[in-house]
View: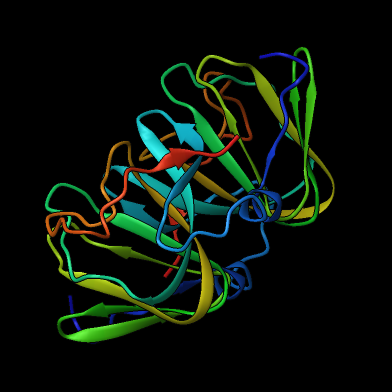
Length: 123
Length: 123
C-alpha cells in the first residue's frame, strides 16, 4: 500500500467514456470485479448460469425485465439477479450503473451475439 | 423469481437504523454480502487476512487510515483495502457506507474486542 492510494470516484470514472453497453472495470475485490456501464435502449435476453449479478443504478432509470416481472431501479437502488434467471435490461433514458460480479463474467451470459464485449479496465 | 421482486433502496434501508458501527446486510451475491453501516468517530485498527474489503461512501466523509497513508472518501467514492493491510476507519461526521465482502467477514477482522458485531439482516 503506497502513499498514492486514492479512491475511485464514480462520477470521474463515468466521465471517461461514452460508449453504451460496454463494461469498464474500476476495482477488483478478491476474484470479483466492480464495473461501470452506460446503457440506453434494450439489451439481449440472457442468463448467467454460474453467478448472481448485482446492478446498482447511479443515474437514470433501469428496468430489469424478468420473464415474470419487471424490476425498476432508480438511482441509489440495487437488485441482484439470481444465477440461472433469464433477464434483459432496458433503459429508456441514458442510465449509468455499477455492476458487481465474478471476474470474467460476460455481459451477454449464455446468449453471446454481437453485443458481447469483454470488460476493459478504466484507469 | 416472483412478481414481488423489488429493488433495495439504499436511502430507505439507511432510514431503518441509527446504530453506529453496526453492519446491516441488505443483499447477497453468491457467497458475498452487501452491507450498510453508519459510522462516526474512530474504529479500531484491524486486518482482514483472508479478504479484500470494499468501502463505498453514500453520505458524509470517511477516512480510511492505513499505516502509511490516509485515504479520504467522499460520497460516490470507493476504495478496496487489500487483504492483510492494517486499517482503521474514522469519520468526523456521521457517514453512511456500503460494504462489499465475503459472507461472515467480521467488522473488526483479527482485532476482536468490544466493537466486534456480527452483521444483521435488514428486511
